[in-house]
Each structure stands twice: as C-alpha cells, then as structure tokens.
Length: 185
Image (tube, rainbow, N blue to C red; front, side, top):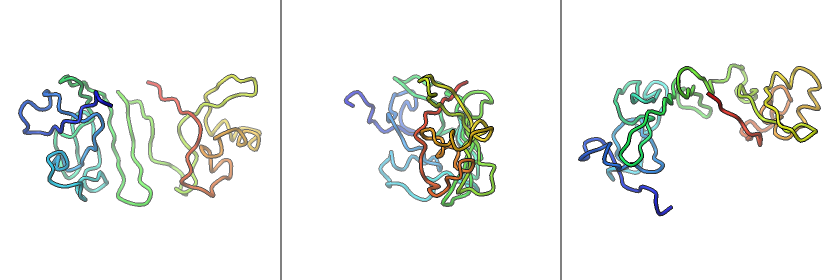
C-alpha cells in the first residue's frame, strides 16, 4: 500500500509519538526497547510477551517484570493518539499452548483462558454464527450444540471445530473453525 506509513518511530525520537512515525502494522516488543525499529536487531528473547516476564499490555503500557508506557495498545494516525481501550492480560508462561485474556473497552471480555482440563480438546467460549436450513443466520454457542441433536448440530459447517469437545472431534487440536465470530461491545 503506497499510503502505508513505513517510518520507524520509537521513544526518544524527536516529536514521538505525535510525529506520525508509526508503522501501519508493528510487532509490539515486550521489552519496550524498540530495537527492531532502531535497527539494533531482528528480534530477541526479550521481545516475547509471556508469564513471569511481561505478561500484559494495555493503553497505559506494559507490566510484568518490566513496566513502561510504551509499547501500548493505543492507535496512532496522522499524529493523533487514540485510546483503543484494548487490554491483553494474564499471558501464560511460554509453551506449545499459550493463553491470555483480552478486553475491548470497559470490562467486556472477548476471550479468556480455556477452563477445560484437556487443552488439546476444548469447546470455544465465544459465540459463533451459523446458517440455518432456511438460509437465515443465528448466533450460537457450544452450549446450544450440547442441548440436543448433537450429531446434527456438529454436522453444520465449522461447528465441530469450534466445539471440538462436545462434537467429539479432537483429532486436530490446531484446526481452525470456518465459522464467523461476532465481537460486540
């Protein structure tokens, strides 16, 4: 995209963050050092968010063993700073499966760590959209799948991936659901 901002910005740069130097998409580094923007390295172990180190990020910055105002989850456009009210917290320790909690504005929780004991086979806690036989759309949950006619409901497109435990479809723990999820405030 020709209009994308490709100018590296970082704390201590003249006029930053209001100078408009913000990548269109940037990797937020947990150590707050902005080493990649400064050309110091291409990333290191201190850039990773994880429990026991830097385990959350929000509009006020990062927390954990480090505390800083940058990076944060604010939006930047044309030198204007906007609070997105996005907070990611409870980031788990490093591992093949990691969990976190994300909140968009106020106390609206979008995702939290799975509560089932078998992390390879959990039902999603997020409501999803299905297409009914008459073509209309409806928001549903894995509780709806378990309520009755499990085999029929699990046969709907994407449902078995979202509700893998309820649908007894745990052979591919890394499979993505084809369902559309709706996030509302």
